[in-house]
Image (cartoon, rainbow over all chains, first blue to last red; front, side, top):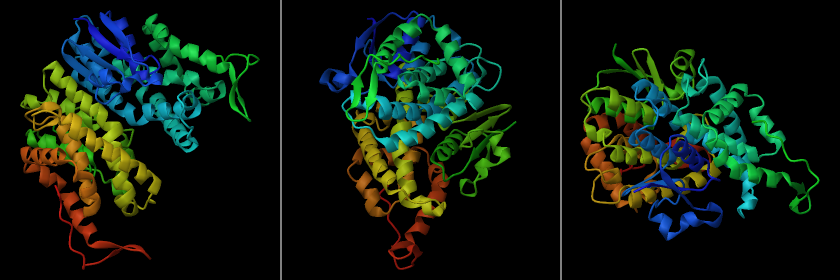
Length: 250
Length: 250
């Protein structure tokens, strides 16, 4: 039975799993679960993942959720996945686990909370929380600095000095890609000071083409849509065709 | 060269790594790094872990931090560690990764933030943040409910239906153990409704005796010290010998 991947391409960890499957030629069926329509709360999806989060997979009778656990499982269970994605060497593997563990309370918390509370909340019918955005800004900036100065230290193009990408590169870069939704000034505020991070994003994108851009297309489309909107102090966001679409720094 | 474990027994993930080493007969040297004295910020420790967090290990020339990465590495690299701690079977292993990944943004965030902002902050010279405590209370309660109803679902005594403990049980139970520092009413508020969680804590403690209690002794001592203090509305916490020491529900 073909692997099933339950995903919403607007979700960073969903994108990481989809790109991983495509790059590694894993035969799978993508099952769209739209977060904006709250489909992850449906009884059908809760039978797959009682935590009501994306992504999730079903491989035969085996159900699994949490994207890092999924990436490790796929890299281990599917023949043909190159070693660099999840090295068999224990110390190289351990360093990748170390980045993946760090990610949750740092880059993910900072990026997801900031983008939600500056851009996405109104689109999801949620209120913007300015204090949460301010706190997330600090976490995000500090996380990018840690990636620049610690995780990308050394001569490798990828995290923890690797010469080829691992599942950690894919997970973290997909997380950062949501900054595409910010306005240019904000994006530049975060990425401008982090030259190695910029190069690493580009390296990861290049190593996973054309799947990287194909899976991120939904994000690029939303970015274009958002660039057509500009703030109206009286009414919040209103459509405008007069503003030049944003140019990505990525 | 003997494995070095840099730890502060007041840190939950440090305790998990220490107990794991002791239970599995791993020959190691414990190097105390006192967080209350900010020793983790020293140049010596930053050379071990530039992220300035505990625990960390040095195995020969190999340095590693992040407790889950450490537990996985130790279970994989040291002969004689029983399979149940980190099963070779891919789907069992994947389920354990799933719990470990979930832990960061849920139980850990809830428990650590709540205990810091209700008990520990004044002892560390930090202000209490009531709003953070209120938010953490919700995360902690929801996390305990998820453990009770999802991770402990089934007939196994341990997480994800296991019959014997894994590194996930050790990590999560060590995290919960910090609730010992709360006053009895608060602890009962969290643990009272979660009978399976209570049984699971006791099972994990029993399976890792006598090391579990020996490593947690510093926590029990602080608990006794705190029980001698009672709130004075005028001056905050003041010492009192009149109050009966708290009785643990664990």
